[in-house]
Amino acid sequence: MVESKLGKLELKVMDVLWARGPSSVREVQEQIAGAPGPAYTTVQTTVYRLERKKAVQRIAKVGNADIFEAVVSEASAQRSLIDDLLAVLGGRAQPLMAHLIDSGKLSIEDLREAEKRLLQLEEEERRG
Image (tube, rainbow, N blue to C red):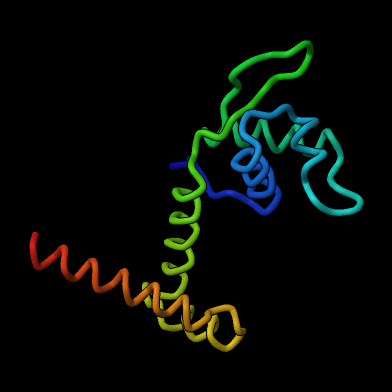
């Protein structure tokens, strides 16, 4: 995955690259929501940091602008963040589930999908 964890702005940059595909620093900066958004140099530093972490790579140069693309997939980054969160919770998912329920961020449909996935995994293990 990535040499070290991703911060908030790094994740925003990655979100832009996952959604848009290869982009220049200027294009990333323009896509990051917020008023006022981060300065160009802040986004540039963040992109270079992501490059050192091997989360993005330079793939081209157009004029003076380097074009970057995500190397790490969104799913991989999400799994890593979730694994980190579970580690903080001692490996227990129950506190996370309770919080999601209490905050209204977990729907009955989400639970049905989770149950469906658990049943699929159980079936795969039985066959496996």
